[in-house]
Amino acid sequence: MKVQETVAVGEKVPNYMTAHLDEGLWPYIKSWLTTVDHKRIGLIYMVLVAASFIAGGIFAFLVRLELLAPSQVLLTASQYNKVFTMHGIIMVFLFIIPSIPAMLGNFILPLQLGAKDVAFPRLNLLSVYLYVIGGGLAVISMVVGAVDTGWTFYTPYSSSTDGAIIMMGSGLLIAGFSSILTGLNFIVTVHKLRAPGMTWMKMPLFIWAIYATAIIQVMATPVLGITLLLLATEKAFGVGIFNPSLGGDPVLFQHFFWFYSHPAVYIMILPAMGIMSELITAFSKKRIFGYEFVAFSSLAIAIISFLVWGHHMFTSQSAYASVIFSFLTFFVGVPSAIKLFNWVATLYKGSIELKSPFLWALGFITLFTIGGVTGIVLGVISIDIHLHDTYYVVAHFHYVMVGGTVVALFGGVHYWWPKMFGRMYNEFMAVVAFIIFFIGFNVTFLPQFILGSKGMPRRYYTYLEEFQGLHQLSTIGSWLIMLSIIIMGTYLLASLFSGERASSNPWGAKTLEWTTSSPPDEHNFEKVPVVTRGPYDFDVRDPGHKS
Image 1 (tube, rainbow, N blue to C red):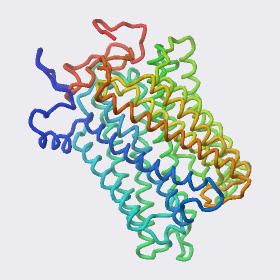
Image 2 (image 1 turned 90 degrees about the horizontal axis):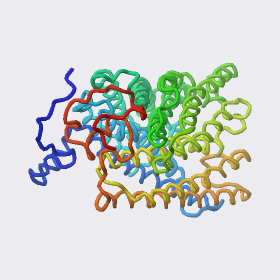
Image 3 (image 1 turned 180 degrees about the horizontal axis):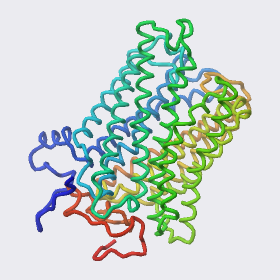
Image 4 (image 1 turned 45 degrees about the vertical axis):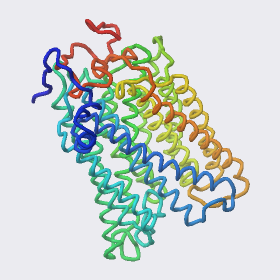
């Protein structure tokens, strides 16, 4: 398969953002709406994902504001249920799941492979429009009749309550196809479009992580689609599938839902782990410790993720099943621990540069470790029975998903921002934003571990007065998180207009994306790159390369 055309010597190649700009405003806009350039598609996803993040963040702000006091502050009980449901649905299905693969994966993966584009560019464009249509239906359903079931849509309540359940489910079903197509595209691209000389053992670890994620996307997402279709069928036609009053089994829904949703946790966290491997090596100037173990642990996580869904159901399944799933829960922690230990070993005696992307990496290691350890605690059946559906679970989940995935996403955005836009941001403000975020995150979610251990249930509109102090502390922390996001958005957007121009390789990294211009040419590389070394061989100097 042909990988890359060679550009004639001396020919001026436009970068991906300025291509077609000289043809006029409408042709330029049309070129974005119909683009098959993976870099432009990555940027479109960036805008869409950022919009979802802002919407989900507003709902989170309203939830924390309401919980300032045990009695009503702003929302009614019904409105509160709808708000925390929309927060969960938007953040999980429209933000975290597509964020790194669709945004950074689309932009960076072909560049790291030395390819001209992904394997199926038009399919890539279709995935964008499916995401827009699915997200649009989800937003419309909020106006028609907001869902109040929680993001898990547990039956029998979801099959009997009012609200636009069918419309919301249809939106998520369509968005799921977007995820499937993206994953399929990445799998084929990795297999078929690697640059000459790039063997599997010379691929960057970010690609290994995206590849493992794509396997989960293709294999697990259809299960969610089937589950939502069955739920819609039951609600629309009264067919007894999950509703016990119709002869159905609500626990069956839980099995279906978590068979997708637990692998989906790794759709969220595996790409984040890939970003970590890139940041750790780039800012310690060292070859990754145990490359093979880190690479194959991504595949191990992808495989084992399909075997542990039952640890969400310790209170609704047999004791024998719970024992098995408890053991598998401990087992799935092994490949994650391998990555963590190898990252720390890589830092040992490294030439550390405390730049802002690296600070986000250190934040990830700290917060994800807390999230992982508290997850192992929940894997102990006797403890989980006490902590099930309490704020302890909320804190654990956010330490993994926000302290892990979102922190890694911010690190990746800071790392690749100069490559994507050719501009450097204000480094001092980036450090300030990280410090405020790190403090705010811990102030928000550490008290929730205490709340949960004391018996505070999650999703409750009111609570005992003895919990008010911890809830207020958690709400203050959420304001710090919001402040850091505002600061971050401000200096990143300002850099597009007044930022210092970035060199092709401002961080001195060794992967292929840093060998092309910043921002990249329309066709990525002037000529086909030939790989002669590993992606982290910092002891090998590239001939004629200037950092």
